[in-house]
Length: 128
Ligand code: ZN
Ligand code: MN
Image (cartoon, rainbow, N blue to C red; front, side):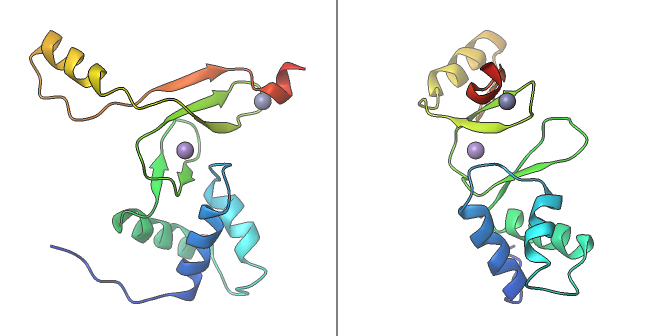
């Protein structure tokens, strides 16, 4: 069942913001930027609207098991790189490896539909 949501200016702005950045921001980051335009914005509203955007398939939550979640408006299948020094998250421009699904499926006799890979190391800025 598809859930219908009332249109919301805050949510539209939020999606715009997320689509304009490649930084995979946290909810705090979104809140800091939106509160200038929406005076009575609360963190609760930010989280609720993020939840709706995820539900609608416009946004993806990246869970790194860290203290806070990061959000990505790029919902195509892609890999991430995490800098262990500054915490920056970047997209890794390499093709999604469907063969890996088949390989894991064969080994374990599973029906593998997807996988996640995160690369860790030091980003260009921190490596200097
Ligand atoms: Zn870094
Ligand atoms: Mn991404």
